[in-house]
Structures are given as structure tokens and as C-alpha cells.
Amino acid sequence: MELAKTIESVRALVRQAKAEGRKVGFVPTMGALHRGHISLIEEAARQTDFVVVSIFVNPAQFGPSEDFGKYPRTLDADLKVCEKAGAAAVFVPSVGEMYPQENLAWVNVEKLCEPLCGRGRKGHFRGVATVCAKLFNIIGPDMAFFGQKDVQQAVIITRMVEDLDMPLKIVVCPTVRESDGLAMSSRNAYLNAEERRQAALLYAALKKCENMFEKEGVRQSGRLVEAMKEILRQGADIRVEYVEIVSLRDLEDIDIITDKAIAAIAAKVGGTRLIDNIILDLNRK
Ligand code: PAF
Image (cartoon, rainbow, N blue to C red; front, side, top):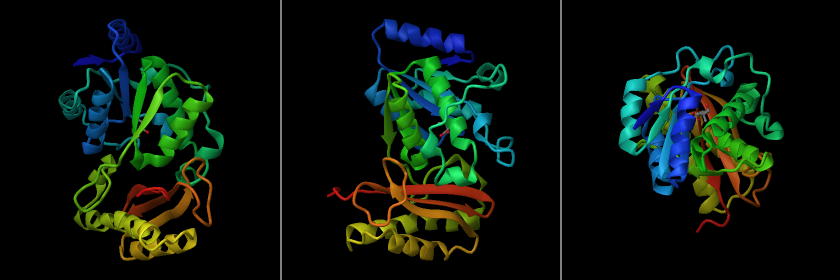
């Protein structure tokens, strides 16, 4: 596995792979890799011939009061994980390499950045879309792989690629979960034992919603949201930021579900902000 720290060196590696006729897959990450990332790298290795993983904690997507400084950085372990999962190259740029001057060109996927996490994290998705556009321009992949756990991010990046005619395919892979259903996240490492126990209520709430939708035929968002909130109230350390049902395509609020929808939760468990979601699909058998 190759390690590239500069834009020039990763471009040279990809140029060589493409010259050999290989299809390039890309998995962007901020490191602190867990089984969720491994599943993305493995899927990229199944669908493409040369997988590039980027590890870059992107300052542009953190607000001033967020955890940029304390975000877990575990590079040595991450490199081993990448190699084992099938990466051909890892791109680990410095902040100066990615942002050598004040960044003035931003990608704003307008309407989609505002709801859900966008309300509490102003500028976050502008930072995510901009760094992904930069990474796509640097690496030039044929396919890029994102996890469903960050569903708003996946919807935004898919739309950015469509609207800006970027020549790559976005693949969204299923959320990987712990045995009690907690979605894998680098931020789970911040939870103490009691918070970790309560964190499982997020998925329990989503499962309740899925059951009411699929087995009882409930289509009213209000009823589904109230049922999820009731479960989250069982966690003394859980402070709900939002529980919502929105359309999958454009993240708009819906009263009655008539098409694919997302049930999404963001909550602080103790001091740690967690998100999770499921897709509600009328056509799923
Ligand atoms: O999901 C993440 O880890 C980040 O938002 C991403 C896509 C790597 C952009 O910094």
C-alpha cells in the first residue's frame, strides 16, 4: 500500500493506476477508522480495482465550538486497517496541503444543507461539500463510497455530483452497527459506560418507527416521531436535537409518507452528539 502526503504524489499514483486500465474507487474519511469505514473500503475493493482512502480531519466542516481539536487521530492504526481492508493507496494531506491559502471558493448545495443537522451546525455541510469536491478533483475517482449513517451528507454529495456534472458515481453503503444496534461512529469513543448503554436507544427508537411503518402500516410522520421520542425519553442523559421524517430525495418535511423517506435522529448523549437514521421504503418487501 502506498502512502501519499501531497496532492502531486496521490495524483501520480492514480495516473499510473488509470494508465494500467484500473477503475479507481475512493473512500474519504477523517480517520479513527472503525468497522463502518472497513465495510466502505471493502465494498470499494469489490467494485473497483484501485482503492484510495483519504484521511483528513477537515477544519472547514467544524464550527468554532465543535471538536476539531479533540477529534480522535489514530494514524498508525488507521494505516493498518486500510491495508488489511484492501486499500491500494492512502492520501494523508496536511491542512496546509489542502488549504494553502484562505479558501474563497465554497460549494453550497443550497436547500439540502439547511434542514436536520444543518440547523445546529451552520456551515458544516458547506465544509463537507467543499472538501469532497476538492478531493474528487485531486483524486479523480470513478466511484466514491459513503455510509448511510451520515445520510444528509450522502444526499448532499450525491446532489452535488449530479448538479455539477462531476464524472463519478456515488455509492451509499448500509450503516454498520454494534450488536445492540448502535451505529458505528468515531465519536462513540467519547461515551462512558452509562452513556454507551443509553446510546442504544437511538436505534431502538428507529426500529420502533420501522415496525410501526412496515407492520402496522402507520404513514403519519407525527405518530412515528412521537413514538420515537417516547423511547428516547427513557435515556436520562439523552437530549434530543431533532427527531424527524423527511423525504429521501430533497430532505423536505412530510406529513404523510407516500414515497421513500428518512427517519432521522440527532441527540446528545451526555456530551457526545450522535446521529442515526433509517430509510422508510413503501416498496420494500
Ligand atoms: O464523513 C466524514 O468522515 C467526512 O464528512 C468526510 C466525508 C470525510 C469529509 O471530510
